[in-house]
Amino acid sequence: MTATLNILLLLFLVVSAIIAVRCRDLLSSVIVFAAYSLVMAVLWQLQGAPYPAVALAIFGAGATPLLLLAAIRKTGGQE
Image (cartoon, rainbow, N blue to C red):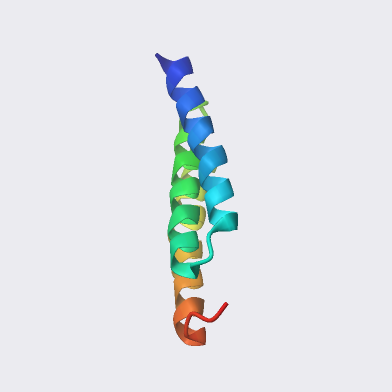
């Protein structure tokens, strides 16, 4: 069961990374990036590394998307 979950999460990581880079809408790209970071934190936790998982959840899925959204808002969402 754990191996299947790991494979599905890794597949989601690859797909979400491609979508985040290829997406033309900045807001959508930030949302996909936050989902990518959250799934990566879950993978770290499943691998038995709680400290990197918590750090990635705080910074990768929390603080960084908020800063990116603030930057998008300040610039008016121009690409």
